[in-house]
Length: 344
Image (cartoon, rainbow, N blue to C red; front, side):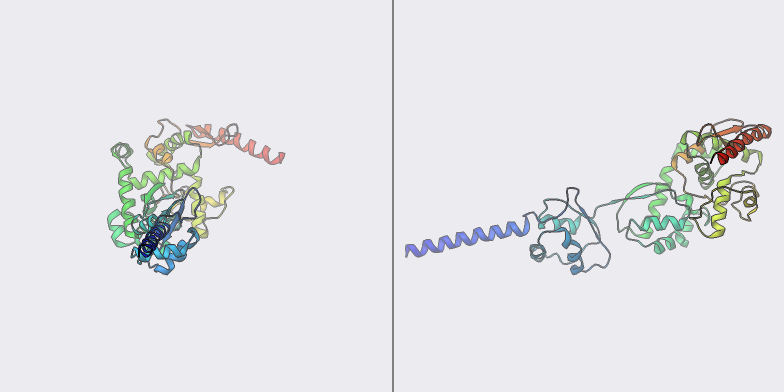
């Protein structure tokens, strides 16, 4: 009798130990199979539970224990979003993350030439497809909120890295961009903008030209000063980057490579042709860097009205206050250009 009791006790203890061990293995034993940086898991809208298991299967060691754990925890409805699996995670942690830890991502964009380019870039990083996002940006609801023309719309989107959820809706994305735009135009920038007597889209439009004219950040405020001087005097801006943009629009090819702007190109019929039309073009020709925007707002005060590439200082320009001085600077550049062709 005593022997039987001992056997039963040992069996009970063994059963408890095995149960505890199985419990630990199923829920707490490391089951993630990821590198030291961890692994992002993206769960799209409409994902079934079987599809979720297929998504996660390459990143776990045992799909069997994971399935058992999901049943025990009654986890059978996937959550949409971006989730992180880290090294050493057991099924308990993995399931908890997939159930409640939708993790924001960084959405980055810059140097986009059109709204269409922008939505394409954004759609590469979040769940929304580009057409859905484009339709929302051009919707009556959003148009009424921003009060911008179709040509000015790009000016609303400022290059930066934005933390947001991967499954953010198109509506929420647009509203977020509106908030970020208002945040960018703080009291200091607004005061400077008003002194220039330019609207926000006009500042961005001019900044886009400055952005394309010079890649030298320390020269941008001087270039901005030239264009502001020309605007004040009612002179045409005569900015080559606007011609390049007009050529791309006409060809409907924004990958078009324009090596040099020729005299015949200056006659292109386009509202973006600043050799024909006075004032600013109807909207930005690209998404300018923040440094270009601030260069306009903090433009250098001077009397320059002209500039041409400086052959002695690559990437920079020679500036002139008079047309005769400009012609002399241009001749210097042309002589250098011709000499360069001969030596080639």
